[in-house]
Image (cartoon, rainbow, N blue to C red):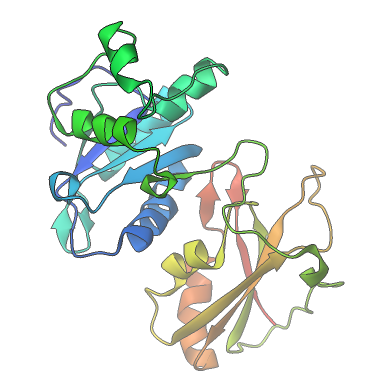
Length: 253
């Protein structure tokens, strides 16, 4: 890992990303990769010419951001080594956490706020990101995970199964994943399982029961082409840490 050139920050600046990857897919896979290091409150990626191959990842705390940078700097991601550094400025998401009354500059007030010196501008890609968001209040430019409801993908409560499928001992082509955090979606879980041959699909739903801590959790069924192919994924991912304090259980059903 190269030494970081900027001051420690809860926001990480990622570059040298594969710019051929769809923006939504990029966000999903970055979230799946980095959520194991701490809580992510914002992911910013754009397909604009000046922002191609770059992204910003916002953690709630500095320790998580630092751990993620140390672990993933230089990692191969979509066939390219990822370069990670601390961002030069705080993200809007971080400023909102620090000051609930903070309002991001919009097209109507950006110039006056900038003239008053309330938002320092930097001359790198972080500036491009800030400037773009100041000029256009385009919510498609960022994916935010609400602190009170950490579920990017809405689920119909009526779809919650009344019982958990029965575990079996012999290998089957269908797996059951339990103890999943609320923010896990089909897209996030697919990132983990699609690296194993024979993967077909995931089906994430709310668990019918709260976990021992009284928190509402999710579960998922994962389908493979054959029991033999499911074995490899089950053995590799049973006990996988999806985020700090959350180990996924994977069994046959």
